Image (cartoon, rainbow, N blue to C red; front, side, top):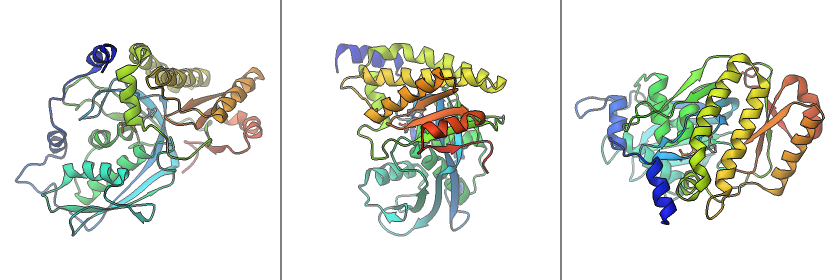
Length: 354
Ligand code: 2P0
C-alpha cells in the first residue's frame, strides 16, 4: 500500500462494532432459545426488481457490515429482476441453481451466496437449496446482485416467517450487497448511508411518489462479464484515487438534488444531476490505479449521440453503472425521437408497468 492509500483509507474507514452474525441475529431476533431459524414452511419465495442509481453508491467505509461512504437514490425497474425459491436440503453443501443450472460450489456466485447464507444456518448441518431466476444478464452492469440479494432476503423472510418490516429487510439485503438495500422497493428509493458503527441506520426507504411520464431506456452495449467487479472496483478506488476525496461531498449534494427533482417533477434537474453524478463516479474509477475503465468505444459514441440530441432540443440524459451499458433518462414526449436515434433501446416506464 502506498502512503496515499494508507492516508486515504484512514480518512474513510470506520470500525464495525458488531460482527455480521451479531448484526443478523439482532435484526431477526435470533437467540439460542428461539425458533427464528427453523423453517415455518417447506419453501420460501422472494421476488425483487433491479434498480438503477440516479445518485450512485461508490465506496465503503466498512467492509464486513457493508457500510457505504455516501447515500444514494435509485429507481427500480418493474419486470426486470430476480425470483428466488428457498428450502432446506440434506447433504454436505448448499445447492445453488442459477437460471436452471446447478452451480459448482466453488463458482464465485455460489460461494458468495453460501457465505451470506452462513448467517442464517441453525447449525452446521443446515444446508439450503436456492433456485434463482434472473431476468437480467448476471454481472453485466444491470445490477443483478441488487435484485438477487433482495429476493433472497425476501425468500428467507418467507421461509422462516419472520414477518420483518421493509427497513429490516433492507438492512439484511445491504449485508448481502449494498445496492440490494434499495431493491426492496418499487419506484424511487433512498439508501441512507448511516453514521453508526453497528450499521443499524444504513438502510433504504421508499420515496413515495409516482412519475408516469418518466422513461428509462436500456442501451445494451456489452452484456458479457465485467473485468472488475463493483466490490473490488470501489475498494480499489477508495484506496488509490486521489480524486475520490471530493466524491462523498458531491454524492450527498446530488442525493439532495435528486430528491428535490423527484418532489418537484423537475426532469431537467433529475437528468443533469444523474448524468453529472455518473460521470463523476466514473472519473474516480478512471483516476484509480490500475485504472478502471468500464466504457467501450460504443459507450462513448452513445454519449456523443445523446449530447447531440440535447443540442437539437431532445431532452435526454444518461447514467452508467459499473459496466459499459448506458441507461437513458427521458420523458414520454421524447420517446419517438430517442427510439429513432437508438433502434435497439429497451424502454421501461417504471410507474406505468405492472
Ligand atoms: C449503484 N453500483 O449505486 C452503484 C453504481 C455500481 C455503480 O451499487 O460490494 O454490487 O455488493 O455492496 O451493490 C454496485 O455495487 O456492491 C453498485 P457490493 P454492489 O448502483
